[in-house]
Image 1: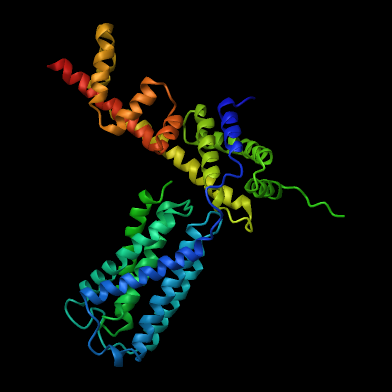
Image 2: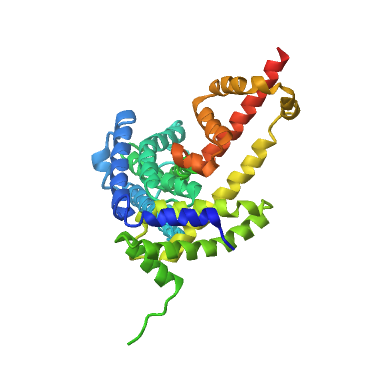
Length: 212
Length: 192
């Protein structure tokens, strides 16, 4: 059986052999660059719109702060691994990476004495926390989506959602500078919700923006 | 001396590595063998989705073009087959979804628009060319280009996408939107 149109296409494509648009570049270095820039932007957004908490210097050595830092950094690390997998065809998604931040969150809830209730230190703690993390994550989300667009995502919505996971974690990491809610339960519930919101946003945008 | 067993993985990966050095014939063999595999997969997918098997070659070509345009992004130190499979899966699903959307768009015509399809034949032929030209040039730029290429020059969606640099999905959607708009205008014109 002769497949005329496809045959013609194959011959045409074969004639372009060796004419690579550019040499192979690994995605990971570009992603790490985007991640660094995303974190820097998130910190700028947090400082500019919410400020650093007044007692940050003394707070920085507390166990609650270490917990916040460790949990958000672990989530960001897992996010980076997942984004790389989502942008590289043939690499399976390493969802087990998500166990890392989950274990840290659970350990925090077990061992840290919460100074605040689940709704935080002030009545506006929850909405401020959610808004701050989501806002801080947005510029980074855009950078990561651009990085993914230049890679080869084969599941656009999924790739967008893990980009949101990474951007949200970086937003949360930056928000630790400002957050006065010193409780593991608060962090587990509201930081996670904020990251999930950014992740969902990433999925919605990625579904359209990451197709090729 | 042990001759390495030749599997699709080793021979195709080899062909793609040599393609980077400009080996066209090995690359052509790879494209042929891979499209034969695709043909089976795509036929089955189209059948399951209840779509016409006449689209098979179109879908295969979409996958081949995708592989070709992204071939620089394959890390030659990693296995090739999972890479091909992920892109093939994405492009096939994308193509099927697009065809389903297209079916829906096509049936988005109102009853009156469907009727206009048949009334069109009653317009005296002498007026046609000028009238069509006038109506087409009133369309938004994208739809206008696509209607001209596909409807008037007779290009396929793929060729239109290639010459205009648009995505093929965009081309198909623009074509149907443009047609729908033309039909609507025909009607308004006749109601005046």
